[in-house]
Length: 416
Image (cartoon, rainbow, N blue to C red; front, side, top):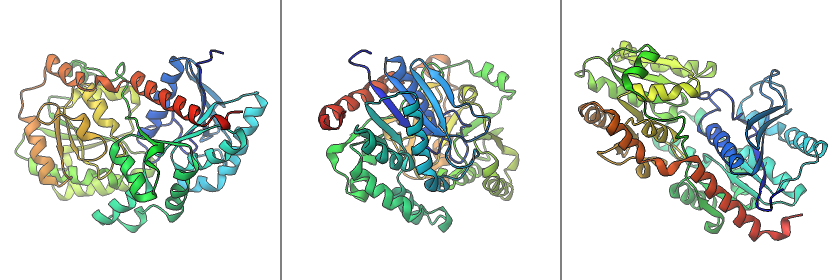
């Protein structure tokens, strides 16, 4: 084995990186884990991604790419369960992982966990294996609750105290934290009194081979879309995503002929939320202008981005904002709220607009500005795409590798 090669155990206990994107528990984090694992593998490192069995049909091992594989472990019943329900099954998950490691004579240099449930599992393994533990939370419970209070979301949307207290403990137990933005780093320090020295900021990335500029007319023909003005939303159907505000914004844009909003995301567990949004559109008398397309395969997304005139991200909270990167990589401008890394990704007036909140009239104003511009041709789309070239997964993986090596160098006593 090359001396420079890293052997990484990556943990994604609750969310399968090859699961259906856009469901309640499968979103940008799953994309991140799959892409970073594959890129680290391409760069010569060995990566095993561990998740729980979500379906009896799941094979135990899936080859993701060169040197990267996904391993399903039994933890509770072989079915989809809610995130919090996994908490009581974490001992089974950790035990199954350790059994698999021993049976296959595996040894890892470090642990890279994702989300607080996986980070908790990682604290057991760091003790057993005597290796450093790097974690990435992707969202923070304390931040979500702060936002819930500000926007008066229903009490049922609040994150449980169990998560808050566990996250507070984890930031001190793990050896290093990766935050996707400076804003998220500051949240760790403010809410959980994390040490600034143990947090590095590494942005998320975009697959520039998959998300690329296509001919708009051809993309529309492929999808069976006509020549309407198309606004696109991509993401989970969740109150924090602010989809209701986008639908309300559409009611301010009745003067724009043939304007349609396409909403991608959902799943069976989102049906109640979708029905509420459909009712809102009906009450605003714009139901014919809003289409809920449900889940779309990830490889189909570039066609939707290219077919759209604008992509809108009206979220109350994003830890980073992968959708903006994907849209811009396809040459499609963005209107987004000032959350996550949107201000660093979107160039005002050139590749879109970032607004301070998702007030419908503000969303409508910026959407109208984008739609009033000349239709984006291939050259201008390529110029938009060029603004996110630095966010290639190869660049992000190199930054993560540097973090891993620094952590290993600073914790030589942990290495067996």
